[in-house]
Length: 389
Image (tube, rainbow, N blue to C red; front, side, top):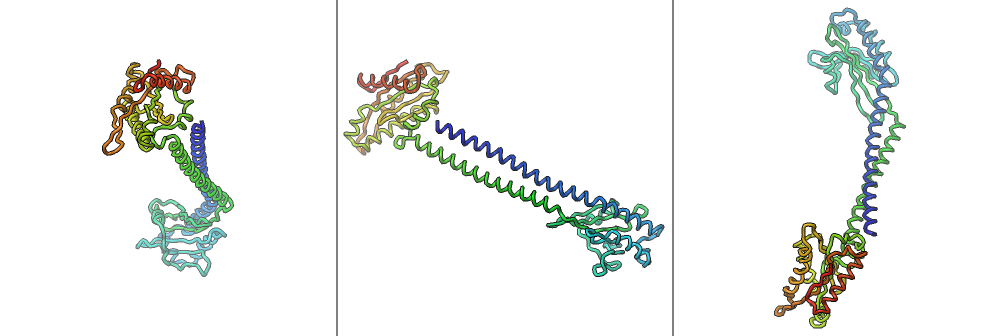
C-alpha cells in the first residue's frame, strides 16, 4: 500500500508541477505582452498631438513657399524665408521635442540641412550633410508618406518623425523632428518585478521537479532492491507482503516448489554449495516459465521454498496451463549442478499446485492449499506434483 500511495503522491506532484509551470509560463507571456501594450498605448497617446502639429507645420511651410518653382533653391537664396521657416520650426520645440529641421536630398542621394531650429551652439549650417541611419529616410521619397522611426533606449523612447513636403507629386523637402518620451518607469518596474518573480518561481519549480524525479527514481531503485532476493534474483517475501492484496488470483495458477533434501545438501557439501543450488534452481525455474509467459511471477518464500504464479491464458486448456510445472520438475531433475571440476550434483523438487486460487478467500488461504498439496507429495516420496482443483 505504501508504494501505491507514494506513486499516487508522485504522480499528483508531477501533475500539479506541470499545471503550475503552465500557468506561470502563461503569466510570463502575458506580462511581456502587457509591457508591450503599455508602451504602445503610451506612444500613441503621447505622439498623436505631436504628429498632428508637425504635419500642420509642414503645411504652413508649404504655404510660405507658395508657387515657388524650386523649393530648395528659393530657401537657399532667401534669408528672410529661412528665418520665417525657422520661426515655424521653433514652435515645435518643447521639453520632449529637442530638434526640428528641414532637409533635402541632393543629386548624390545625400541628405542636407536647409533650416535648423536648434540652439545656436547645436545648429547645423546651410547645406551641411545629414547622416541618416536607416532606409526609411529614402523610402519616404518613394511612398510619399509620413513615418516615425523608433529608437529604443534604457529609460526613454527616442523617435524621429518625418513629414514629406510634396510639390507636383514629388517629395522636395522632409520636415523632421526628434523627440523622446520617458517610459512609465513605475509600471515597467512593477511588471519587471513580476517577470523576475515568475522566472524565479519557474526555476524553483524546475529544481523541485528535478529533485522529485531523482527521488522517485531512487525510491523505485530502493524498492526494487528491497523486493529482489539477492542470492536467487527472484522476488522475495517483501514483494509478496506488498503485492499480496493486489494479485488478481483468478488470472493465475499457484504453485509451491520445495527442493528435496536440501538440508542434506547443506550438511554434506556446505552452505556455499547450498547457495549455488538455490541460485541455479531459481534460474531453471525462471528460464522454464519465461519460455511460456513473461508475466509469470517467481518468489523465494523461504529457505528452499519458491512460490510460482503462472499466468492463465483464455485460449489454453486446463491441462496445458499446469504443464509448465511438469517442465519445471523435469528440467530441475535433469540439470547438473557442478559443485567441483570433477563432480556434479543432481536434485529433485516437490511441487504443490492449486489450479483455481481465486476459489479461496485470499492469497494466504490459496497458498495454504498449495502448501498442503506440497507436503502430501513429500509424504508420498517427493519428486512429484500434487494438483488441487
